[in-house]
Image (cartoon, rainbow, N blue to C red):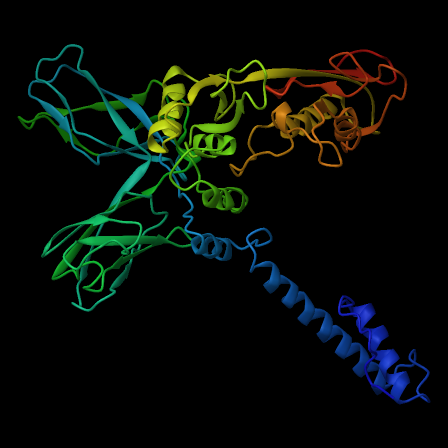
Length: 503
């Protein structure tokens, strides 16, 4: 008699399934062993084997999942998988701001703050640090004694390494988080420039490659003497750390500059600083989900813009562009032949500036060249405002304010253009991309999905079940959306289920 059945099911891998299979196997070999509920040594061994099998299969499932870009969860693994297809994730980008420097009195001599001078926000613990990008001077007798200068949410770092004169040298930089493209290297044999890899480097070219790991720590690699020269002597490395969305501080918050200052005649001066406008441009490193979305797209579009989707992918490579939609005469009869309209939404929503429209046009026609005879227009997107009204019965002990706050949070998350980690929020899209449950174009915003969002809020006991108790733009039905439109949340009207009063 066969010990293992011919149709063994390898999908039964949890504790209970493994124990049942072990019991079946034992019965096929030892038919007299029938009592599996007694606390004897044999049954203890069965449970131990089933437990070990459960743990091992969990590890196997995790390892299998981490080997695929669509299922990997560990940042280290998804970075390595992305590298296999030539995709490099972006790290932190630093915020910048215009800083106003003011002296308490008209200076007798010229006063200068040098490049790299540190300023910060006023928090005692974990202040946000900025440094001057250029030197700024207030001339003697200047009245008012003030000047402006650009600052950046970064910290300059310097390290030295000694070359071993061996091929393929690698050096790990000590400080984190490393800011992309901030590294400057000079050695005894000259200045080195950064490249993506050494494939096109000859033996005399002074190139280096930077690899950033899951902890935002940078490793610097040099050539082998055949592809890229080998550095000699002392290697000086200057780079920057910091960045991220934390640097987007509000106006008037950069106001601390520490130290004693004098003018060029050695007269003491009292200095104050502030940022009149909010700092901007700070972006956190690419999240795992954002890498998962963008890495496969990098294979589709290499260095040109040809297909309809290419325009969207290349436009969204700009950090300022959150979403985009490309339509041609094939998709919209109002568009002329051999022409197209590229609709874009900037980060944070709203309408794009003219400079951003121009940047996108350059991106998809020059940086990534398109077909020469194709006529393209870049526009801001058309939004469909979705006003929601609901008659809500609150859970016991919950205030109206708590219910409203939770419902607004839920709906804002549903309609957000981007997720908090920077990836696209796939819950909302242009009408062109709306699909029904079967994956076919629907052109409708689901009433039931939004109704469920409100109904499932923890502070909500139930929603009224009468006509008009839950509506989208005044209608208790799915909402039609034009293919050019992008949905955005409008007003949220909540009526108390018991009293009918708005709250």
